[in-house]
Length: 341
Ligand code: A2P
Image (cartoon, rainbow, N blue to C red; front, side, top):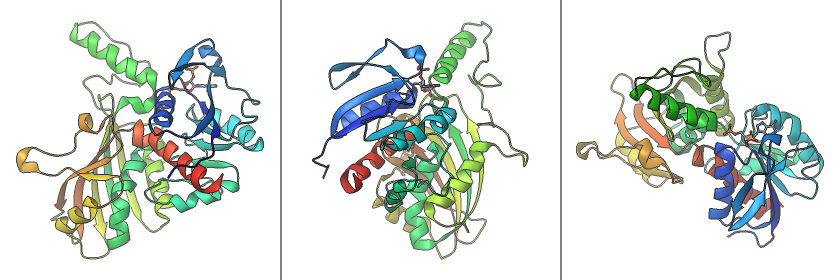
């Protein structure tokens, strides 16, 4: 049941791909809002956005924006969160941050409500709660019930990530490049180092000295933090694909205990936030276009890995803007509102 109290809520980055969805999720899920403040850069000054039929003027994000606010949901980039979240916290406004800025801070809880809702309680440390990386969220929603039952020793994951994860400029770039190529015109690469239309880029976020990207590294450390188990081996290859919305993942796990595809299917059928979509003989398996616009993590192609003992393969798909970002953040806000504020 939702809290009877009503809250003053700010959305920082409200004009962006995720921020916009955050505003819609607050509305859809009937979050108990007293007043809403929509914040963005000075570029968006004068813009109006709709909230529950009201036209709300977008305001410039400033250090003083959070006075009198109870909860601020941020999706305005890491630098912006790093700079402004402490000002919000100082004014007693709890931050739920979608960037990677605070995720690995030991004092900041990193929360997926289906997995570690209890961690929200640690918001009192810094007044900040981190929302995990989109690819990590859908992976741990699918794997947590299996980890509880069988103990996961190792995860090998390859992602097929939609451009919307990069933001609205990347959505525009895929659109314009696709149109240009289909019209035999040349196209410009502005957001990514290479053309994303009709291509796959094994490169998300910056490269680190060990040859992995920062996105791949996020999947390793965030997974361990959320599952509260530093012994799990995780190795990731993250790939940007020419899909607008919906991330897909090929996941291979090795369990500590005896596991079978049949057991995995029956456990996941009852797992919170998961929908098993697995009838390959009838061409039924999770698809990005089916995942979009809803909040469940779709899991299919569940099969035994015949190359190792206790290995399982699966295909996991979710709406990266909703469950991978906005919905997860609003679910965290709901826990805060119901239990802690
Ligand atoms: P704006 O639209 O005014 O640029 P996306 O992830 O889709 O690119 O969106 C990023 C969001 O973060 C947008 O709402 C953008 O606002 C906002 N943003 C980016 N930089 C800043 C900043 N320095 N201060 C406040 N908001 C910012």
